[in-house]
Image 1 (cartoon, rainbow, N blue to C red):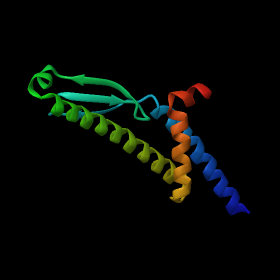
Image 2: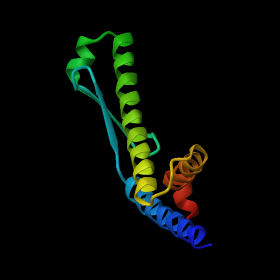
Image 3: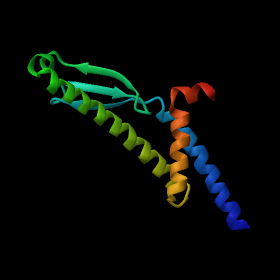
Length: 125
């Protein structure tokens, strides 16, 4: 019974830490770059595109197809940075709480984080 209680306390601590980290992370932006840094895409914590900066040199130097590919590359890199930060936050929160890495638990945490970090989820909270 004590072991079960200790596990529940660790889970509660992990949930509180995850909630705190999700709140902090939801305010951050993540950038991805392409064309030697001349194209920058910025996304929020859930991967929504917030800004796209294209240097005039890229506009002149690249044909439309290559420019489109570079823009997509920058966006994908920004999305990957946001996803990597989320994974690191989830993994770190579970490790800090001493909770074993269980695929189902991580999946539930991922879904809960996505709900809390999205602008729609923030409106419901």
